[in-house]
Structures are given as C-alpha cells and as structure tokens.
Image (cartoon, rainbow, N blue to C red; front, side):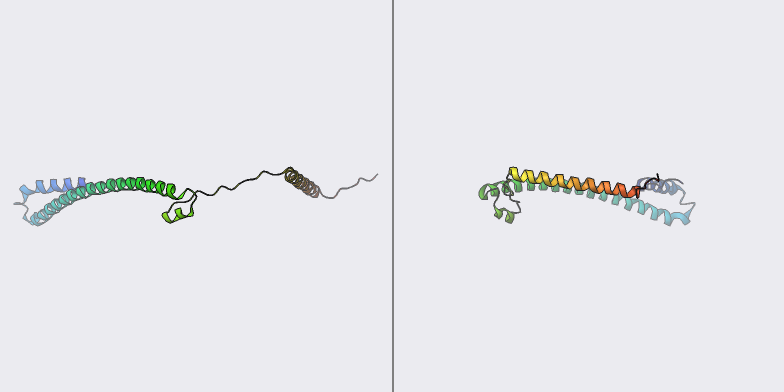
Length: 151
C-alpha cells in the first residue's frame, strides 16, 4: 500500500494535469468544465497555503511575545515579593495576602535527657525480646509437637 501524497504533492500533480490538459481542451470539450474547476481549486488552495504561512508566522510571533511577557512578569513579581518580605519580615503572616509563603517559624528541638535516652533504649530492647520470642514460637509451631522416642 502506498503512502498518501501530501497536499503540496497533490497540488503539484493537479497543476500539472491542468497545464497539460489545456492544449487538448479543443479536442476534449467535455473535460473543460472539470479542468476549469480543478484550476480554481488549485488557485484557491495555493492562496490558502499562503494565508496559512502568514498565520503560522503570526502565531510564532505571539508565542515569542508571550514568553517574553512571562519572563518579565516573573522578574517583576520576584522583585516585588522581595520588597514585601523586606518590609514585613520573612515570617510575617501578612505575606499570605500577597501570595507569598512566610518562612516557617523555627521549632526548637531539645535534646533528650539521659533518663529519656535510657528509657528509649530499654523500650527498644524489650520490643526486640518480644520479636525474638514470637519468631521462636512460630518456628516451633511449624515443626509440630515434639515426640519422645520409646526407650
């Protein structure tokens, strides 16, 4: 199965058909209407191609301008945000009104006392003992009841 022709290839083929058919229209008058219609379709298609190229160029220009506006907007927004942070402080809740997240207040972490450290270590050791006992019980259950050999 052959690949379908592109519109440009089809336009070239159609134009060639119209151009090559013109000298024969006196001999083939019944094809004159269709040849004229195909010629107008080719002309209209070429005009539309030109218009499309202009629209694509304009669209590319619009995209470029949009990217430039976004870049400029980000720069200005960041400059204003820095000024507002400077005016109110980095942790002030008023920053939320401007769409700026305030820096979270620092939570003070206190170290554990020696007693708390010892309690945590004892808890971990107790949990470990329970895990080992449970594992041993599961292993014993898999083996089944113990049998004594007759003497």
